Length: 229
Image 1 (cartoon, one colour):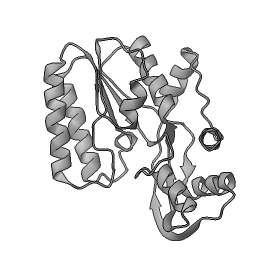
Image 2 (cartoon, one colour):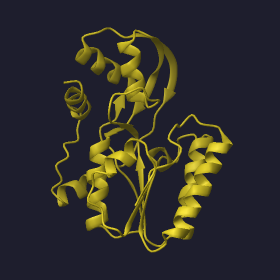
Image 3 (cartoon, rainbow, N blue to C red):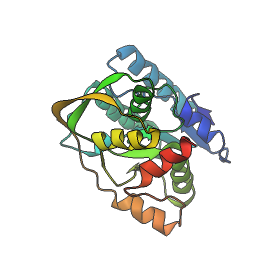
């Protein structure tokens, strides 16, 4: 069972999931969201879905930022933490995957990767923090990791899944400039926005299960080059 109709939901529609799995891919995804109605919609849907699927493995997507205790938490992150608590209350068979900047198809979307791509393509001016860093993961690698954890790992876990290499946002812009052969029109703002993650567990899991996922510094440019072919 898959709850949702966005990019995550669509990529899991390609999976051969067992009937004992419920993928909840209908949560608030914009980390700048402050709309309590959106938070309430997810909260109500989450509780209803948990109650009606209490016998299933329950998969939820949260945020890597929650793993960094020093990182300031806005309304969105506090909401995600509340959703994690609800899942732990209602389910004894859950898998909470904390994900970073997600990218799939390079369509008009509010995620960072897509925003930078569209801004450069359409020659829009945009602003970048000089000390902003982000972890990333491509959507199909999310699917591969989730499928592997469901198959080979016990439930009741909360795990970060991301490329362990942390990119400076300015470097992400430069990657797009190189791939598109086009200069970005941006201004730099003197501000810091970053956190550090310990990715040892996911790195070990990928090696143990011999997964075809090639994380590292070249991960982003290699994945984007494939999408821009």
